[in-house]
Length: 156
View 1 (tube, rainbow, N blue to C red):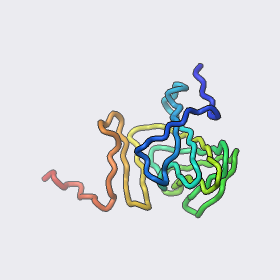
View 2 (tube, helix red, strand yellow):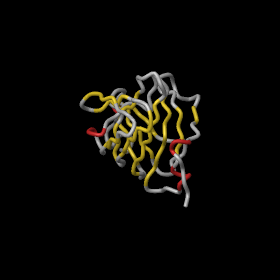
View 3 (spheres, helix red, strand yellow):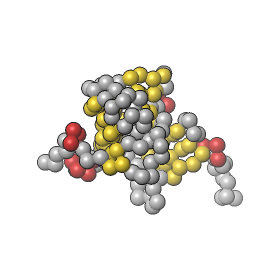
View 4 (cartoon, rainbow, N blue to C red):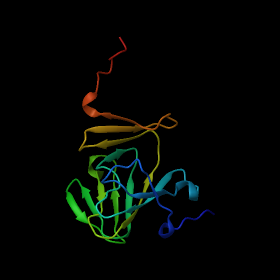
């Protein structure tokens, strides 16, 4: 049996994250041998967020607050959460969310979700669409939704 303690995570702070999204992460899925469910713990310093406001197709996500009082933006507004709060983000626009720490102390949250490929994320604020395909080289394909072309474009 593999085991991971969410309170003893070894957070990595990526230099590629821009201001406003400089949080620490540790994906624990491979550490516990997961394949159908994926999980990450985040350490979110004051004034930072986990990822941009988005919703997904192909995944249901759950957020559990481990410490602190992060603010959750969702389709109906914003709510301040506290340690122990558990929230589900269903597939589609009703599950749109963004986690920001407006407090003075770091917040820690765990997000787990179903895992399947392909997966699609929609970013309403920036009108982007991200597609994660199994085995795709170079990571996800992220495009502006407004740059769509017709189905037959380039084919005939």
